[in-house]
Image 1 (cartoon, rainbow, N blue to C red):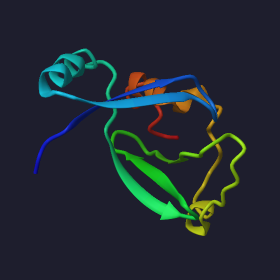
Image 2: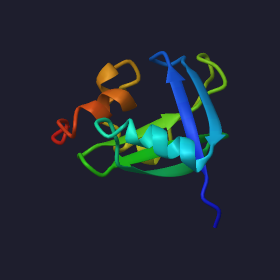
Image 3: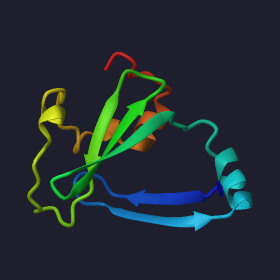
Image 4: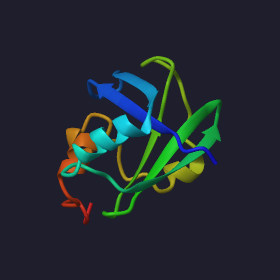
Length: 114
């Protein structure tokens, strides 16, 4: 298969934030990757379609943490949480800054007991 590289920029916090993605070449990836040596995450992502939306389920490999995220057309969009997710959901962390990718990446697995 063809190897592709994507740069993602996220600004803001909470429910509504700006997100931009573009495809980059391998040279730019290597340059940016080297700059992230102190702030990396290891996770597997599973995409699950439910109720007309796609849930992104991230299982972190360096800590005991699984996060579920849904991209909505607007802050006021109605959605239903799948029963299988309701059964294992501990709490809503949308407004908790400790659960942003940046915060998790710079905590070096300190949340392993979360």
